[in-house]
Image 1 (cartoon, rainbow, N blue to C red):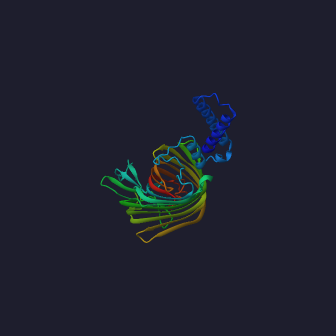
Image 2 (image 1 turned 90 degrees about the horizontal axis):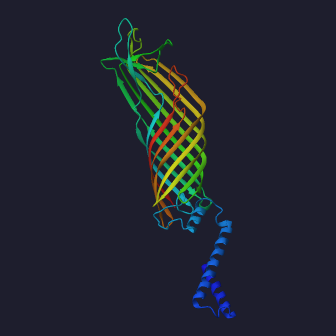
Image 3 (image 1 turned 180 degrees about the vertical axis):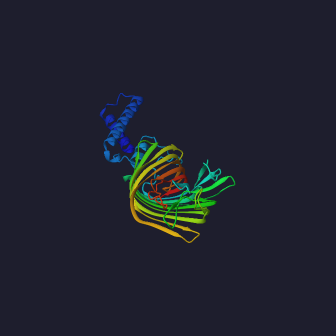
Length: 395
């Protein structure tokens, strides 16, 4: 377009000179007139470009970048990545791997109360105590993603798989100044009598394994050269398997002032859950320049699925008590919140490499369906909290 403008200006100049309009003009006046004609040509070109809606009707990644480049708002420095949250590649594949360092916990896993004080043979007693529960800890996990970015259409599709496993334990024993360990999971005698035993030792182990599969479709939108949002929706499937084993040694099933009868008691609890449902959310990126971006993610899901639960109580006298509950279908909700920092580098061969480090929280409502012998309505929420560190490749 610049070449055609100069040719048009030169031709017009020749015509004016030939017709005698320029006979009395000085060279300075001639240069001024040519400059004015060039400016007029540029203004007409800008108006024509703005009227051509096909170039900038898409408000997503590609059109936003084109407009910012046209206005001189995007740096040509390759260290400053201002493209889509999925990279600088016009369209192509997306691969990402993340290391997880999460702290998993479940409500209502208290298994004993360590009592302090003594119990007289006659008269009232005055006891205090503290709850005992598994020592929840941080454990590693992994999350991998693969997808495709459709480029100028601003749409992308991502498949993701998440895995995490934890197995915290705990143990307790009655000291010299202790009245014993009060067993919360009440013992059911062969006669069907509920008994609250006191034990000398106790231990517990909770195991939780979670697998999550996500399939989401997202749309990128640039509000400015510094802020972008990716909205997404899709499907989520989850498999959560729990085991909770407790052991009580030398447990007095006669009570505080009852007959002295001691047994070893083992209670094994198991819960298997699967669910599938819809999810939706947003990802936001604040592009700070030089490849650095602050990011956040908010998502929620509703899953419908089933629970299979089992409990088995055995004691050292050979008594066994079992309860099963299969195919109990429930709707459950979960929420996810994450924030972090990303650094990305866009290479000249159309490849983007990015590293990220962030903090993440997940909340799974009412996941504790493990029953005890007496309590038929268990409750408890499952939570994950911790770090994630990842690397992403767009090509």
